[in-house]
Image (cartoon, rainbow, N blue to C red):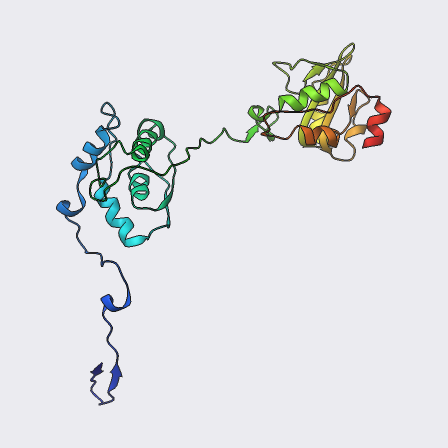
Length: 280
């Protein structure tokens, strides 16, 4: 207990508490010297173990990241490094018992990070802080790759689902259901299959709009007809032109053709148009 003194004599008792009495851990120093947290040369020696030909330009030593994680986290916390670089943060977090998420868009994700984390888990890398924490290996990590952008711009300037995500199974199913031959056109995205005479089929999971139908119509030849099978469509799409017919994809086919599913058991059989209308 201490007493503060001011000029007017209004003294107020105050309780002084020391940092060691209220929390565990360590107080950060203003200056961190190289003998305590390492330097760039030490960090580069750690990286050369994984790729001696392409040493990462600006690596951080494991001792430096250890100091930061000791000050800012505790066992079980999640550590995020959105510019992972050579993987020092995730390697140290793993050895210190932290959960972690690392993000890297460069080739370093393969040439440095993946190799480093595999060696950490296997216990074959004894550099960095491994000896200091008696690291012998263990645990695991998941390595994900982002797919291409889900949205792309078509020739009309519309935002559409990229062709990378076209579900071939769904298109094949609808071609079979509607008695068309699966035969995607290399030049016209709206031709997925061929029917009798000059008839084509277009299958899409987009919300079909009148404007989209009109754009396709501008490319449709006078002697051609088109069947469009969308998941949903805007009222009026079916009345744009007599050469274009619009029929929704049956729910039974959509349920069987779930995106991301590796195997498909398609309940496809030859049916009349009246049966399809009744289901819808």
